[in-house]
Length: 531
Ligand SMILES: Nc1nc2c(ncn2[C@@H]2O[C@H](COP(=O)(O)OP(=O)(O)OP(=O)(O)O)[C@@H](O)[C@H]2O)c(=O)[nH]1
Ligand SMILES: [Mg+2]
Image 1: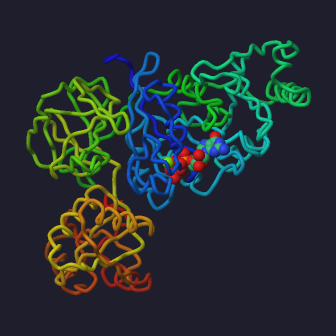
Image 2 (image 1 turned 45 degrees about the vertical axis):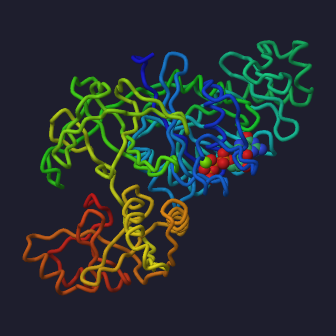
Image 3 (image 1 turned 135 degrees about the vertical axis):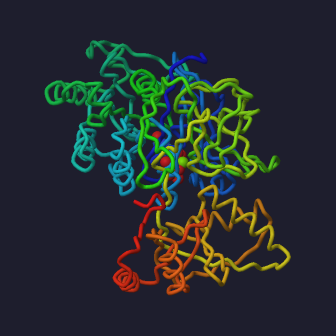
């Protein structure tokens, strides 16, 4: 199994389409968990991937999580992402670590606002997409209408791989267009062994017993339409992100999930090549391509998560392996600090459970214990000075000042804010001269997570006051003299980000425009990669 080809993919969708439910079912069909709990259940039974207290309470995912399991001849790494737009930076970073995605659609609603945003991110890398039309146990749009909706809005060619028979209370299951079989979960006590109905002859007694006449007529005419109108799946077109294989079903009641998992394990790409910058890693740096078959190890950190287990109070950096082979106990070169670090206990994840990874190969996601040394975007090699690209911070749009309620907790607050900003939960800025701490976010829910986690994990009560900034720009100067002058002239608007880079805080677009006109030699960027 250790040499098995990796399949590293993320689940994405608009909030509530059923990512976490699907994740749980995939793990279950992959036989790594024995029970599946209701995501929103109040009984303490919750989805394996939604482990944070806040997620349990609300039934939403606020950050992505990684789960690994062998399936057939591959090793699957599945990344569940949050759907809410306030956490889209987390989702965006997660997408840098995968080769393909599974996109969930709520079949009553079709394409929703966040689906469109996520699609744009996938397009940046031509990420291959498998689609799952979920919630067929409820009333849905007509399946042809759903395909049309996807094609028109997302501009992607849909190729159905399964087809739903009925919906809502009349939902009978999905017809597998390749095998011409129907898996019936309702008739089986053990969902891992559904009753499989051979539907190659739609007039057979077995089919008639499962599917009422009216639905059978509809299925027949639907199948004829599919035959006539839809071209078969071309794996090259799928890999290029032009076609998407489409599955129908209900994650909650198991229908269609196994067919989807089988297809992902058969078709989805293994580790791909990636671009890196050579020293000095600035905007003019030379680039090279890292291919997975390179002998030497390379990898990068795409996510940092503290306090995954409150009892342990630890922090884990998630590394995506891009080339070479890593063996437990080996030393890796940490490019940013220019130091060799021994990685004694790398971890692999099965939601809350973790195991020690003996080796790691391209496509793998491993966890490193982090005592505060690592940052998102850090590159590891066997000595080569390179840096993986494409994991920036984006300019926040709303700001809060933090006011401490208990003056004795100052140190705790500093530690909490530093750690949470290093994780990317929120961005932390310090104002020039006045030394005020300002939090920047894309959405209000991020502040809620900060407040909750400061109380829950760091035992700090703080008040939050909105701050009159409306944006932030990273700055680039011709030289130090120009920098000093600009900072002196605009002292009131200068902040430093977590990496101590000078930024201009925007109080109004008008204000920004004036300052830009007055300082044509200074460059302003919305993205910390200076793009
Ligand atoms: N009826 C029905 N409900 C479903 C199905 N799949 C998910 N749900 C319900 O839809 C709600 C949202 O499901 P989640 O899996 O938490 O959705 P999510 O996409 O992970 O949500 P976020 O992470 O917050 O974006 C829950 O109440 C689920 O029980 C389904 O197939 N049928
Ligand atoms: Mg979720």
